[in-house]
Image 1 (cartoon, rainbow, N blue to C red):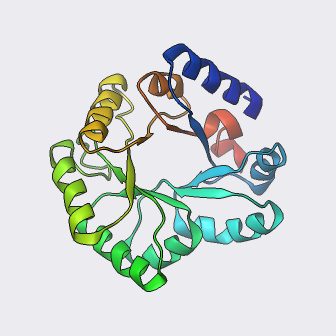
Image 2 (cartoon, rainbow, N blue to C red):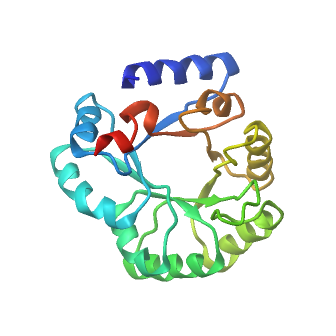
Length: 217
């Protein structure tokens, strides 16, 4: 699917639901540079990466060639990569534990700035998946604000692949509203229109935009 097709579908879903602006995060993890450059050449500038090392290997050069890029970290962040992540990413969407919050706060203080942060919520309580549990989210958000003064602006989730995503999207929205958070990063290639109907402000689309990663070689 082309970038224009996806943007058209996002706009149609937004119009149907009466939603506000929705940002497309082009998920470029494990994609070849040629595909990423093709999307950049069409004018898109908002991208998401899962791994700090992978992002470090290509985005500094791409930023030099394409001004105005905004890069989101959408994969788990190890505490030993926090300083590097703060240099690379404009937004970090995967704050999910106290130790990481503490490391981010220390690194941000040393650096003099911290990017906007999303708290990742494990809405399906899946043991193999990162994210704060829903029942702990309110207390965690309050602690992050109180103890570390970190700029939390939204929430992110990845619903279980074998479940209806709607209850997960609604749960995330309820947590966000209780905590006065405007950002909702939810919805991927298979369900982004549903996510928009449920209030997503950011959708993360990879395979529908770039093609299958396995086929990329």
